[in-house]
Amino acid sequence: MAPIELTRGDLTEQHVDAIVNAANSSLLGGGGVDGAIHRKGGPDILAACRTLRAGHYGKGLRTGQAVATTAGRLPARWVIHTVGPVWSSSEDRSSLLADCHRNSLAVAADLGAATVAFPAISTGVYRWPMEDAARIAVSTVREVDTSMFEVVRFVLFDQRAYEAFEAVL
Ligand code: ADP
Image 1 (tube, helix red, strand yellow):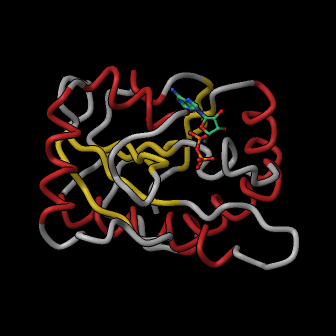
Image 2 (cartoon, protein in one colour):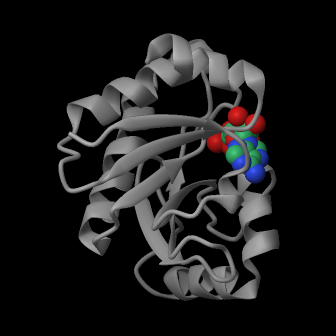
């Protein structure tokens, strides 16, 4: 099993093979970490996303699915786009958040990525409570066969997120 690492910082600055983007279903950019990835990675990422939309992903990317593009000018080689579920207090969408992690790691393995970095998916605009998101993210990565990776890293943007993940780990 690959070690799970926690870092406080900016996902776009990670020198890893693949970073995971908390994208939206349009694949055409948004706010939060998605906005930062497109801003710093340059237009090649959006061009690759538009190509996906023109092909197999005509209706966009479904919640829980994952697909890779170039990382453009970012230090990573690939961006794996996944769509987290929007938090709901009336419906349990945990399995979709687990799918994001599972499917992103499957895409990373297919690419031959050795190092993978995740943000705290769904915890921003999609409002998932941080402690619960951390529990789902870490337990899902632990359940998957990660022996093909050197490291799986969570990059937490603020202290509160870092502490939530640290408590689970
Ligand atoms: P979602 O729509 O899935 O909630 P967001 O991008 O709004 O996605 O937020 C997901 C998490 O990413 C939040 O915890 C947010 O603080 C964090 N975040 C925002 N920008 C960055 C960044 N540059 N690097 C790492 N994490 C980030």
